[in-house]
Length: 301
Image 1 (cartoon, rainbow, N blue to C red):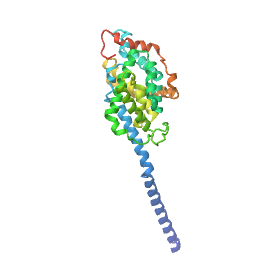
Image 2: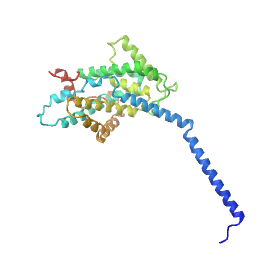
Image 3: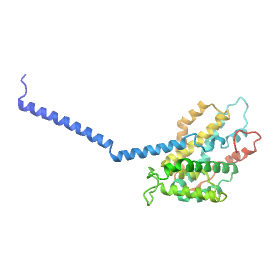
Image 4: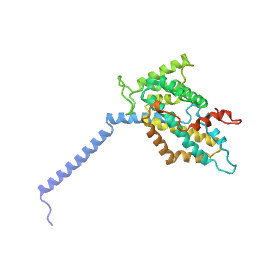
């Protein structure tokens, strides 16, 4: 077998050299794309949104939610079971009805507060007028004022100069920042609440929407987290009421069934306006309202 002529060998060496240079050039191009300014900005925005989501989902956020059972204690008291009967089926029914109630009454105000933060005072007044249950109204105001206090004392210095929100659903403002109007709305609302505490209420759902927008949490995640936090609060109450153990509660929180239910409720309420909000489970107001009538209770009304 004869060796290739010198000219062919030279061409093969040149081809190999060119292929090596091409591979090196492609690798350098990919590296530059990975660290390009656009990719860094996108990564920073995503990280900021995730960080804000973790802040709002923290169970240690001082909203006072742990003090309420959202009607669970009253529901169990009005559905007496034999001592040998498990209470888990009752709890599952209550959680399903409670999430449906929150999605039909409060979620539209969360979404509206996010989309139109300048309307916070109107939304607050409308939510108060559409909440006939005194106990539910008190709980909403207590949590709303706690959330407003968290904003004033903890988040305001970090987020009042925040840059453009990462949420694609939030309309762009004339000054180029989607959070500016929301920040101004929160500041004005807080000032008005201090000046005329009996004219404003500071209900939780619309304030959750406005704060979520300021923090740059995407709208769909803000709605999902609002319902998820409620489910977590109800399950925490169930653990303290000895309905289930902590591991069982975590299993329910992690279940695909709960995830699908919350996603479905957010999807159903996505286009619903506050004017369309209403109680879908009227008896829930009775269970929540009668909580303060219980002779013995472990949760606040």
